[in-house]
Length: 125
Image (tube, rainbow, N blue to C red):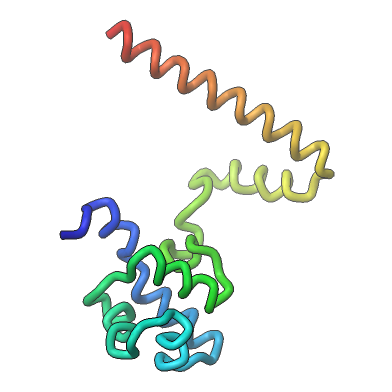
């Protein structure tokens, strides 16, 4: 039985898998060969009737030369939903390595404070 959280993660997987495979000009047979599965099993992945093991998923990611996120999430599904934050993160990407490190340190600190507040509230509540 599939864990509900895993099922949700793989919700977009069949559609994205087929799209990216076709973009790369690969056949289902070639993808199956590279993933080390029978073509009929691979077709089940694209139809959504089956989900690959983690090991097969890794081989698929490598064969397609994409991130796992690209197969699991729709475009713009990850990252900040707030447009202002999205633009700020894009701008951060243009900073020097030292400046990006400073921003990352600041974000890490704020997240650590947030986690500490949540922990304190849970322990005292």
